[in-house]
Amino acid sequence: MTSEDLPPRFWSFPNQLTLYRIASIPVLIVLLMFSGKVCAFLAAIVFSAASLTDLLDGLFARRRGLESTLGKFLDPLADKLLISAALIMLIPHGRVTAWMAFVIIGREIAVTGLRAILSEKGVVMGASELGKYKIVFQIAAIIPLLIHYTYFNIDFHTVGKVLLWIALILTVWSGARYMVKFRGVMNE
Image (tube, rainbow, N blue to C red; front, side):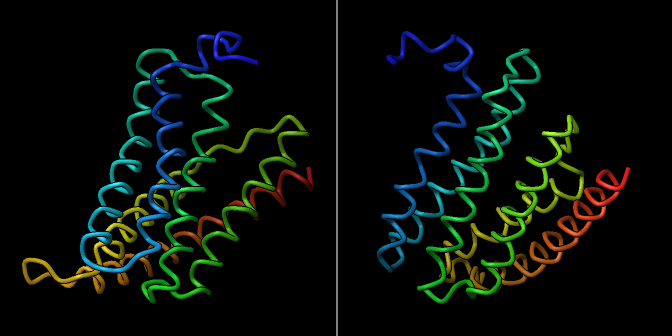
């Protein structure tokens, strides 16, 4: 299959933004293989730019009528991959504890599984408002954890840790709500 064989919606601007987000993950991983202020700052820039595409792809897709099945699949996948890669790569640097990363990533895998089961029953379980806050706090936590160092008298590591705790609480809370919804649908 060549790029000419793909439908035009595959190459829509929102999907290109999502694909950029996925393509930025190896760059982020390579930067996080090294320590130091320069790599930390560059990793924060790459992650921030990739995270910004999450906001933009949905905005363009809705406003211009470019929503697609592929986009609905790729967008949350790109989010999960980006967040997971950042959390995992921050563990060896001592910026994220392994158990926190496991809880956040485990919730994402569990909710994805629940959605797949429900989709077989013809039920679509979209992102909740709480789930949207969760991703915002995850991104808001990871950026200062990537920066890590103190700039302008701001201890970015501490800011990131506080935000990560909030993100963890929202992650568990929204995951529990999905479980309750799932149970209710399965008992119908």
